[in-house]
Length: 367
Image (tube, rainbow, N blue to C red; front, side, top):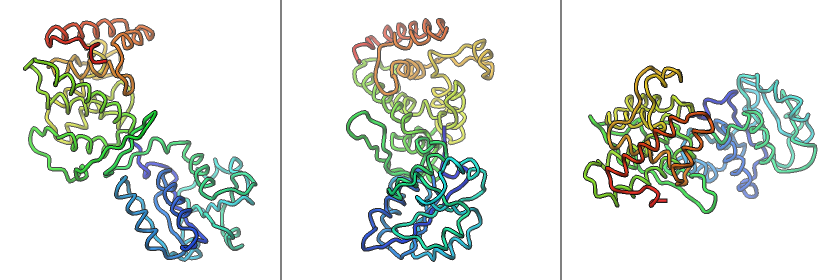
């Protein structure tokens, strides 16, 4: 579900002290990049370094989010003028586990990260002098451990709207998607809007769909494209099918629960896309949900059974994608049986039979 750095509490800013532009550019850059990736709002650097500032801003422009960077900041004024608590990371401080619960209760935090020698007045001005072990090691690692514990490891769940590049999880190799569309708020929304693939990716990213879910929806999209390329049926509106496949899990920006289909339809309606895409998102779970099942599951009592060929295909192809790998439908059926949803598995099998008969294909041929 969607989580932005500004959703994290307490908000954190970082003050980097002792930066030497001629020697510390790489380390300070890493401090700044880690701060952004782990949810801090921005970083102040004590020595003026316009090149370093430009490098960090370039990363923000490419990978999204709203992260501020300033250099040439007077550290004494920054600490004295900060409206919140000061946490100084130092190997001479108290162990993090002694104070982390107390630190979380504060409204705003400035984390001071030093280089070689931090002046004695910082220790006195800090509300907390915190150590990540009493052994020498990198300030980058100290900051990473601190933010990881402060936010309970939520760095993997963060979204960065406006990104032009999004890194997708891969077991081997690298996969990065490029998005050229402007931010969602600036996209031209037409009546009956059927987005392009680039626009659909922008919708997913800016609404905060996690990268691992985007990886899954791309896998469903690619599966759908192969169906379109190899199927002779004229029943399918391939443009609609492909965008429905890409956007079917948009509701996971709000929740990973069974209601994510309904939430997705609501989000797409608010954006103003084609109503057919809304229905694909709403009806893609399993092989559909009957009215009586919906009521039992706590959903608004209505039928969520796919009706159009595009709705049925997205539901079925989704059942054959485990994370982002294609699997036989039997994997889905067995999973449903293990949790007592035998009817759902049987419905999925009937849906596959119907689609194979109508489209004259065998889905296992695409595995």
